[in-house]
Amino acid sequence: AESLTMPRPTNLIDMHFDVWTSLDSLFVTLDERQWKMMTECPGWTVQDTLSHLVSSEKGLHGAPPTSPRAGDLSNVKNPIGEFNEHDIVARRSMTGAEVLAEWHESEARRRHTLGTSGDAYFSREMMTPPGPGTFADFLHIRVMDAWVHEQDVRRALGIPGNDACAAADHSLGRFVRSLPMVVGKRAKAPDGSVVSIEVTGPVARTMHVATRDGRAAFIDGESRPTCTISMDSNTYVALCCGRQFWSPADRRVSITGDSDLAGRVLGAFNVMI
Image 1: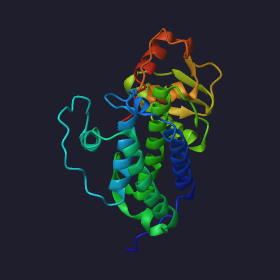
Image 2: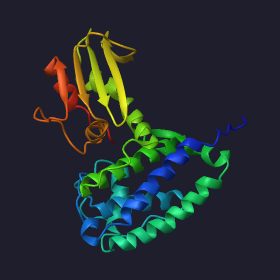
Image 3: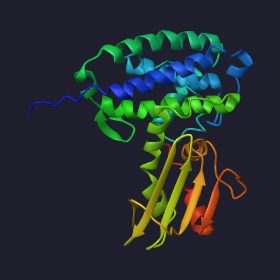
């Protein structure tokens, strides 16, 4: 059978470039103390986060993995995480400026490749974190990954920004997909219940998840939900990524209705692989 080529995912490429541009303007301002600040990504500094982005893009460009091996893998949960850790450890002895120089070199190559490649490049089959797919599917994930790591860095540095962009909306959309699993399978919402999630901005969305016959699914609207959970999109992303974990004392999150069910849902929010 003739293999189908997918249209070039121009919107994903644009989002990816926008995140890189935002990161570039942030990174160029940092001093060595800031590069070494810890993020909420376990065990990773600001510099480690950029090392991860460097190694990811170099790998996609065909570069072999680095040879040093990470000794401490206590934060690692899966083979992808182990691979990431080795490439980060290989750059730990470098200065932030040195990693940034490597990033700029790699970024220029990747911008050229993504900017000039045709449909066939994006249609080629490859393994993605959720399973087999195309490079376009992988780019869908890469945009989210790059934007999430930008936000990790910004929270660590106390320099918020780029949280209302197209990549922010895209990333939130990827996390929203998992809500039925969070509400039904993890929080075990009882039959007949409806959980409403209000994300108030900078990226604003309202979702309603109903449980019927033991299955949770999105519904279009609900006037009387069992519980309503409200928070801003930055909080939503930090909880979905497991960078932060909800507690009843969290003033950024408001709950109306069944607080026990809402607490179970919030406790199950982390869906990052």
